[in-house]
Image (cartoon, rainbow, N blue to C red; front, side, top):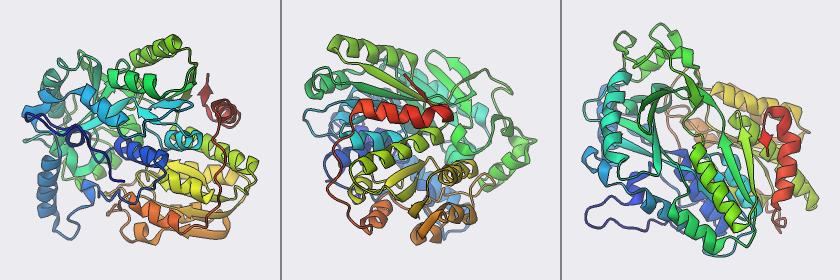
Length: 469
């Protein structure tokens, strides 16, 4: 099954697959979740992230080539006002089979959300989508200029889309050279979009429960105008907010690697009030979802996670219990990273999945701590996604090998990903290729009921700061 595109552009209006950034986690996670419900793996997800390209080209030429490639993939500035959020929401729900579901998972992008949805046999509906907009005369070290340009784009994008709020993110540590030629806009729904309502009304079983997952990380956020906010850096970068200043040696290294200059660094404000980071759920969206659930006679449950690793650990523990309750060992673990994920193959192989958001040192360290505190696994397979750039905040291969070493009989670090680490990312299908090599452990367990999922998340996640309510 190929990724459903649907809603082909008519009258020159950009189609959803031309708007939603192919480099974003939410798009990859949506594709993986939909394939799992179709009973398929991710073998056809062959897209290579932009930062992985032109590796053999001299650096000045490579930056120019990356800028051209990013511009081609981004939304053109003069088309931003044509973006229709409802068409994107319709494209999202069309990824899934049209049938009855015993529940639904909604909210922030996280690999654990997709694994939970797969175990329960339900869809995952993201509360956001991400798009890149071409910035013709941008610069990596001009965050203030990015804000001004982003304000112009928000003025075009938001009036025709009153259901959205936009969080603009300028993060050289996370997106490298690309922040100098594109701006990143995370569009978050402020109410349940009509296509979601129709899909839930047609496919959700009567009184079926709903689960909303919310990323509760915080970050300095600047209110840039009506429904437009801005942040420099992001929690996933592996840096702290205080690092994004010219005097920081860590940030200076990032700028050097990305073609910037910390002497020219311009930021819109030295200090901003702390708010929820870019992948949180809009409060108005949650209220809208709650209103729909009450009208439908469904119960809405919430899980708030203060760090992605808390949800990753709780989901992995839940999978282990689910597998063992079905008579399986639950002693084989796969540590996924970023886009290297395949929930259908994980269930087919009867493995315990732990998802790392990215290859940041602190993210990989959290995986080590979880493995150290868990009952021993007979095997640990590790899929380290190369981030596409070098930074002190990125985990080295020695740290990834330490993660794999927790396998008593098998400790495997994917050689293809290692070969190009950290500079050359690999496509999602690489996770499928690795997991296909695992022994089958069929039949798969019966679908995990939501009450059991909530109980498992509460038992394992509460000590880690997970709030289940």
